[in-house]
Length: 441
Image (cartoon, rainbow, N blue to C red; front, side):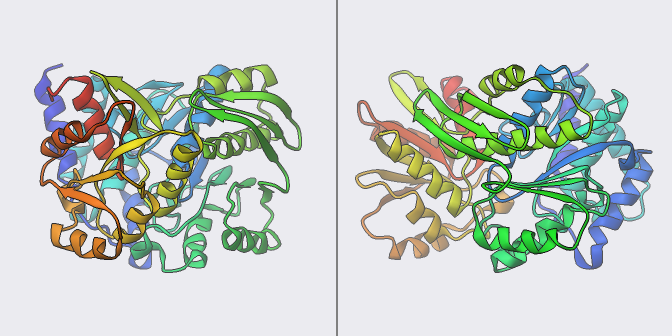
């Protein structure tokens, strides 16, 4: 394959970065149905494990996929966003899509969309779903672990009829699309539950979200499984090597489960994944306890509290991108006794800058703020500085490009302390790649 084919595919995808998707009266669902018909893919051919939530979707999806992979169960995995390469979003049995096949699928979709009369209304997520389902169809994959984009009803994927609907932690995020209250947000996300959905795994702490789902439980035939009611966990240790915990569900009692992902919140995500496995076992899938434990230990997700030492500096990469995720990240850092000397971050539009900065506030740390890698999601420097007026005792620097920001991080670094990179998975992925390549992009 010539590099130009991949470049053409990326150029086509980049044309969708600034688009705003129409969501009035389910218009985005109409578009989704039509473009899938255009490429001759029927979502009814697939068995979906569909995951929505504000935090922990990607980790939960990876835990589920690892368990399926270790049991040699054919499945597709769709996640997003990616760190550096689009191919990271699409995997079969734990292996990412080949770049040549990725390019071929994307360019074929581009060609087929040329004659589609509503092509200007096709959004980024529409195209991602087209790529994923085309890829899975080509390889005869039926079972799909699917991480939603924004919300449930708000996401084009709401045309799916999942066998298992999974809800991870819920918080205020994407309020401009989902609503201004937790009730609005869980109402939108709960729409992934369809009349044919067999199980709903409700793995959140948020009381308002739980109460809303408890009400739904009484009015539909879907079997609901709630964290702390139908399954539970106890964390026995948590340090810089990972977590150890016990899990007790309706079918499994698993002892001394170890996961290498840092942060106690990952125990919640892993427990939600086991609850999904319990539901799958009731649907006829067969699992072994020892293999589940092994799969959880070997599950990995880059840039979720990932530590990297390079040229005498220690970086901590984490893609936390909303207030709750940043608060949880800080709690995990504090509990592990890690010393942060500087925080490099970008904040995308439609986020509460003040609350996010307060959530990740470390005394004595310097803050290096840089624009979001996607220009369409930038917040103007003036807006950021205005939002930071009320954040007391914070030393911050604003740099218009990531290279300058990273150079400042190197200058501010102190011996035996950590540079935290967070706020956006795109920023984290860029910086990690830059550091590993020693400044060469």
